[in-house]
Length: 188
Image (cartoon, rainbow, N blue to C red; front, side, top):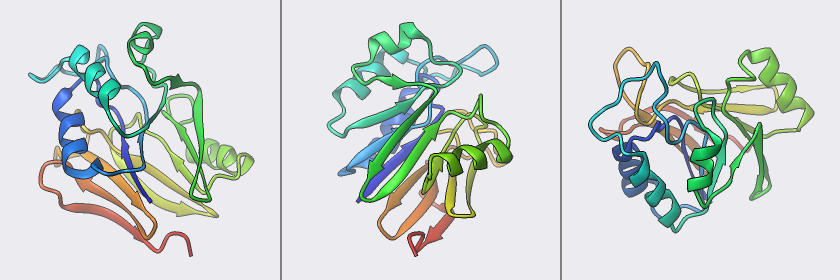
């Protein structure tokens, strides 16, 4: 099993393209934690901001994409995508894992996330929104935020994505490929 995890692309084509071409080729699924197309009023637009092109890339993607609605995702954006944007969360049962995906804007605190994960018996709880990667296990649930692939809020300015396989979960610096966070043997 191989699942690519990305969030907060905010209409930036290079973020999606680099993630797909370098990390997500041959994946069984791609999970997007929301804020897919629109940059939002507080975010800068970089030169690769092209939501129409990003729509085409996602629509043409040969790998199934699961998307949770972010606070910057509008109904107009959703109407352009052939993949539904699910709200307020997406639930996937993949290879025996219960995976919950929510953007994180309506479920911000660890206590709120813990309660939702417990109620839904999540093995993995994926969120986005904060533009900073997180990978930690609390109780029976792994909490994963891949950070932002386009508009990081990390001090070192590294844009990040995650990759989940049968044996490990890794968060990568999108540009260098360096592993920034890792959880081995997470199913044990």
